[in-house]
Length: 193
Image (cartoon, rainbow, N blue to C red):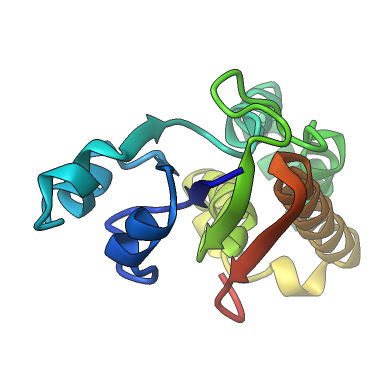
């Protein structure tokens, strides 16, 4: 396929969008941030190139943040706070352990094997770091004195690491699934989210 896909496209500051447009029949930009993708497309000087760009606003994790938010909302955090740090971090660990991580995430707009090039653009660490920050934000709201205590709780640390690995594996499987036979995947990533 001569179609290209940029996951986590944003404003395309990390990828050469004009060059990809010239080398592809279609370039699909996928991100939650629609205005940044529109900006990237609108900055192309050629109207012909702009017409080749398709924007897809959506969650490429398969709803991980929503799944985790539901689990967090089911906890009686006030009761847990009265029991101390261990109870809170055990509950947080349980939420991470039970969180559904679709592997690979499904999208009605992205068909398997449709792309000759799939680029994951600095999105991988965001896929796990934002949900983990949501857990820590919940703990901070309920028990602010416990913020930064998570390093002392082995079960929480293990659950967070396992959650990261599940997210990474699901994302890598998504890249593989979207590629056409003989296609190329490019993973642009920071070291830590």
